[in-house]
Image (cartoon, rainbow over all chains, first blue to last red; front, side, top):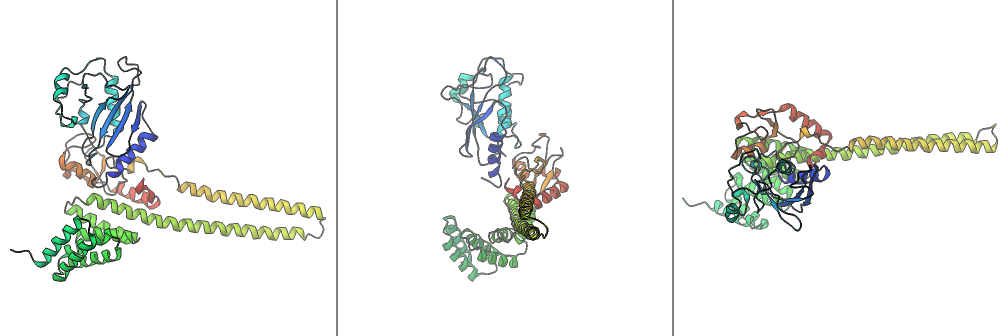
Length: 153
Length: 280
């Protein structure tokens, strides 16, 4: 890792554990490369009610100067949330994960952005180009140049 | 042009260094120095090897020689600070690391972030030494006060037992009262000292002393146009590939930055009393 960023993830982890936001919890963070964060949508949105979803964060040595790689992952009993900006392979089209990233963002703030993106959604569907995207998607969502869909959804 | 003999030894040393053969690399750099003792790089390279194998005195010696050859040598000052820190001489380490930091900024060296961390580490160590001394003095003072209390009451008890006009059971009763009084006062004294210690143990750094990108306490904060402060070397890392204010996303370049001297002074003062905050 370059310079003094080694401490940052350690401190983020402490904060996430000691002072967690409602509906956001650390499922796994054994090293500073990959973390799994569980999120729940706190209001009674019928699309997500009673469900838990799992976000995977991958950190490059350049984090937080560069954005982490963030996507949903499926697991036993855990599915990829339905959303017009979330592809069925877990990739998320959200500007804060790409061109909208800023180094003052944190794992917690990104998780909360995604949580509120789900909370505000009322369309139980995938992006219109889901089949095509998933068939050709790069392994890392960071290698996708998403055209950000309109922000109204 | 053929490389000189000393350069060939240096190259050989660099190869050994990259294979973590520090003893071998030191031998090569020494040969380079024998051939040409005017090149500070041979000394700083050898100093780095010596640091790696904890030959700190010798590393320090190499840094001093490199500095004799070139006074404004950033690397020599930085390595010197590391050697001094390893030798537990934090005050001198602080001085050298501050010089190195200024030189690194001037030359836009990528080491500036690591040097800023060394400055903070030196401050932390300096605080630790003071803290140890304070604790020693405090416990010595407490013990002395306890002794005084004890001998004071020993005298009072002695006097009570020798009271001419008292009967025996009254003497015993007075003695017990005095002993009780003495024990209560000793307990109270210890508690008072403990309470003052608890004040020192409140270990929280206010958010406004923390760089929002690295989450470290500030050493050299700069302010952007939006009034937000960032650690200089960290923000410069961001501005290498981006040109926006991390908070407002407004256009931002290095020329827009201003040092935040008030915040710098506040951090310095905070660290004077809370050196632990470096590892917070």
